[in-house]
Image 1: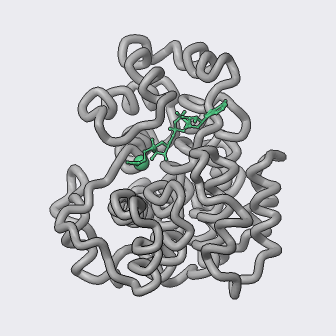
Image 2 (image 1 turned 180 degrees about the vertical axis):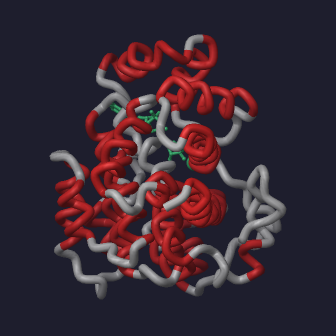
Length: 300
Ligand code: F2R
Ligand code: MG
């Protein structure tokens, strides 16, 4: 595979990640009336707002893709600086608490990421879903080599998420996107390549869960990201992707039905499924609403 092919594969995934992020984010205001929000999702009525803005999920995925485009692999200090620059340019994209602590420090001293990242959350490091939410395009990039997917996803996560659960979430999502890009996504294989962790336990539970299960029920069993942790976010989002591996819109509706951290669950699902489908079959009414990505004339 050439660098251009890898970049194009990652970009397809990124388009779906950003679509899921922006679509999912629009549901938060409706959560004030959960019954109405649920009815809207069940009726498959898209949020009416004309502008669906993407959030930190997309901002950080853009940073990661920029490093891959420049170096062809994860360079950790460069990635730390890229994330910090993205945060500095627009800190109001809904970043997690830990990232607001970490990224301004990395802007000044990006090479000290091992120490600063470890200091978060009383020295445990972050186990948030933030390393997972940005990892799908990386999986698409390295899709031909599963071991490299695992190694590069680990390196991409370590820059912000020192806790093993945060890292496992990123590995799982990157592996799922790589398998999706090759048309052979299964929850069992994602679990097999994910390090021993609560994330992997959740993926194994997801592998046992029939795709006939109602999405709200699946989210109830697997977690819907409400705790913003990798282990309560990744299993349901990957289950939704595996339920609709060839249909991005159906996958996003399934994920939205779980509610919870819906920008991030939808970003994860979107990035995984779009690694296979791209966004060509997404209705224009969705694509025209999504905030464009930098460096692109429009989604596609
Ligand atoms: N910030 C949010 N969502 C809240 C707002 C949602 C909505 N827009 C609204 O209007 O209501 N989303 C963003 O944060 C998530 C990514 O988080 P990330 O990057 O992992 O950040 P952080 O702060 O490191 O971790 C997230 C939370 O996880 C818990 N946590 C992490 N490590 C922990 C530890 N070692 N022990 C205990 N808890 C830990 C904390 O609660 C962190 O704040 C995405 O959803 C993104 O979109
Ligand atoms: Mg977000």
